[in-house]
Length: 88
Image (cartoon, rainbow, N blue to C red; front, side):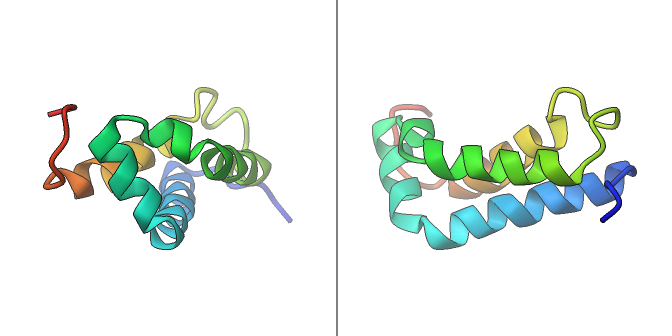
């Protein structure tokens, strides 16, 4: 399988991976935002997602995994901004 080498495709893949993580880990996300430990609770899932992302995207395209990290913020954090938390 050819590696993804366009920004749009890399961004779509990242958003798909993070959306799947969000779909199957809703309770962890709610608790993680409430308790300010979301990255600890989702460490395994986020690492597996990042491994998948890296296996599919050309390293030269996204040397800092910026599309993946942006998807985490947009999908896991911003979309859950209504949850009461000490973070905000």
